[in-house]
Length: 187
Image (cartoon, rainbow, N blue to C red; front, top):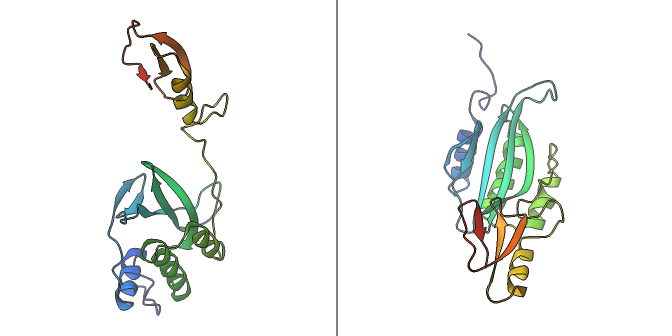
């Protein structure tokens, strides 16, 4: 039987973090299965949450550990704030850094800029790849608010209709035109 002198070695990140939080007299949030092998924390009152996922070595990377992502829910859309990684097995240094970052984000409610600055000091900080904004027309880079402006400038008897994906203007029609379910009316 293989033994280890490191008492943290055989424990999971979430268990070790919960125990450390308890020693510091605050409650570490509960995590539930989120999908694609990730776990998600309970959302705070100001719409913040954390995800953790296990990363295995593969062709692209030999990293063997976990990835933490700090999120904020804005207008019913999750916004990624910061990402960092930890080795698979927690050690005292990683535990202290990670607990500080998670507590700062979830409990102390650091500002986004402060959170990004603190996470940037983590030895395994991740780069955030900005995804294509679903609220943007890919052809014209017009934000969704363009839809509202277009609707406001339309004649009173006109309805502005957008494609089912909500980003591409398809036509302007008058109030006698029949609409089916593949279109949504924005005005």
